[in-house]
Image 1 (cartoon, helix red, strand yellow):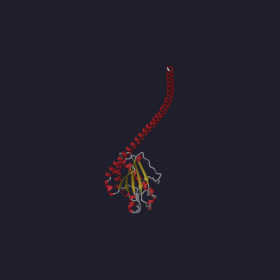
Image 2 (cartoon, one colour):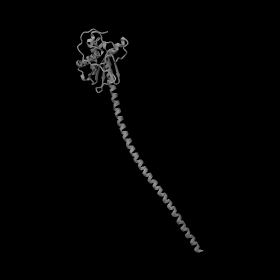
Image 3 (tube, one colour):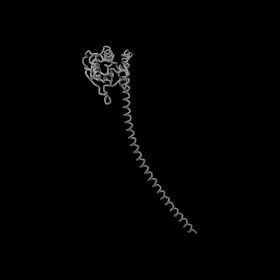
Length: 263
């Protein structure tokens, strides 16, 4: 009986040892699997971290470029606003100096596309069919010249006519409205240079004949408005595009002979 009890106890110990070894192996396998998962997660996390770091660098670069571009746009907007403020100030000054002419509607002032334009009807500047300046015309030009001396704008002088053809003896001097409009513009440019010593490099003299009317040439009143001299003020760096406009005629002004006026 005593030997039987010992045998049973020994069998139990051996059986218990076998179960513990199996459990250990299972746990070991499970641990190894978890370790592999952790290693894979760590590798994936490092890769994602590197990707995030790279993405952040790209975004930082884009943000820096965007800030620089925004700065350029802001400077351009400020420069444009400054230009508009200067134009507004200049327009107010001209309106004060030309109050009487504006009231009589012989002079119009317009601000368009960042440019200031002073439009003078030819009846106050020239006699009919002539490129010789009238006294009342030089009086207006004197006021304009005083306002223009203190800046560096390009002074573009445009001669315009109505659609009435040149006729009679006048055709000997001005074969068409091209020559007449160009001669009138040249006379104003020459007056600014000689009388007021405005730098001729700032002056542009252009004739556009009848091809840029402000209103249709369908009445005497409208024809009167189209017969004009326009003085357009432009920034010095601005260039003139002629891609979609007729080529203007430019001619030197000559001494004006006595000729009969056209209607």
